[in-house]
Length: 374
Image (cartoon, rainbow, N blue to C red; front, side):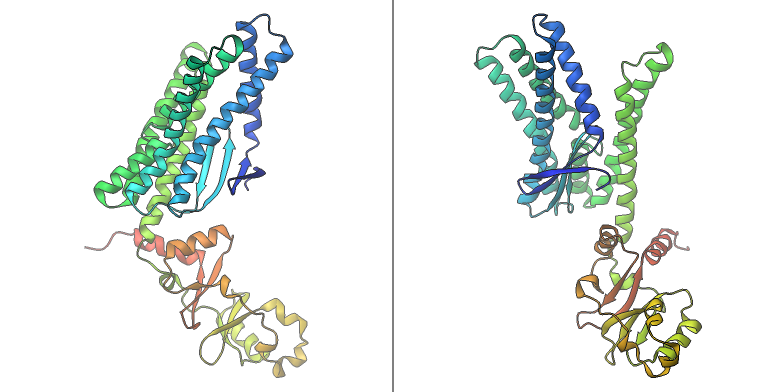
C-alpha cells in the first residue's frame, strides 16, 4: 500500500505505518528526552530517553485516537473505513466514500477534533487532580498541550484538514453541491498553504534561520493535497449523472461464440487491429466469455477453420463486469482500485453493451469540459 507497513488492525480497521513515521518518532523521542534531561538534571540519560520514547508513543496514540474518532462516526453512517495510516504529518483515516448529507459529513469531520479536545481535558484533569511532580507532570503537560494544538490546527478551515471538511460541509449545505464545497475549501487550504510556506521561507531567506522550517513542509503538504482534492472534485462533478453505458467504446471488440478461429482472425485483422482481447457473446447477445489473440496460439493454424471461438474462449466472472446503469463515478473507482484499464458493461439480463476503457472516460471528460457553442 504505497510503501506503508501494515502492523495489524484497530477495531477491525487495517492499521498502517508510513516509513516516514519512524523518522518523526526518533526526532520526537530525542527532542523530548533532551528537554526532560535539561529540565531535570538528576535524570539519567537512559531513563530520559525511555521517557522521551514513551511520550512520543503516547503522542502518536493521541493521533490514532483522533483518526478513530473520524472512523467510528463514519462506520456509524455505514461508511467502510479502508485504513488508518500514520505518516510524517500525523494520521489519515481513508474512508470508502463521502457521507450522504452535509450534516453527516460535518459530524465525521468534527469527530477527530472533539476526541483531541477530550484528551486535552483528560490529561489536564489528571495533572490537576492527582498530585504529580517531576517528569510525570511534565509529560502530562506535553500530552495536554499537543492534543489541544492538534485540535486547533485541524480546525483550520482548509482542506485537507478537518476544518476544511467542516467548511466543505457548510458550503455543500448552502449550495446543495458537494463538489462546490470541496473546491471552495481547497482554495482556502491553498491560501493557508502559501501562508505557511511564506512563514517558513522568509526567516530562512532573511536571517538564515531554520526555526520555522516545519511550516515550510506543512505548507507544501497543504498545497499539494488541497490542489489534488479540488482537481478530483472537478472530475467527480463532470461525471455526475453519467452511467457506464455513456462511456462504452464505439465499435467495441465483440465476436460471436459461433465464429471459427479463421473467421475470428480475419475479422480481427480487418476491424480491430489494435485490440488483443475480445468479448464473446451468444445468440442472445449475452456475455459468455473472452478470447485473446494469444489464446489462438495453442491451436494449430491448420485447425482454425474447424475450431470455434467457444472452444478457446475463457469464462468471465460476473464480478468483473459492471452494469450499464451503474454511475460512471463508481466505475472509475473500480478501475482505479483494481488497477484495470477496461471493464465489460452489461445490462441486467446479461446482454453485453460493450467495453469501457479508461481512455474513453478521459475522452468523455474532455468533451464535457469543452464550452458549448453559442
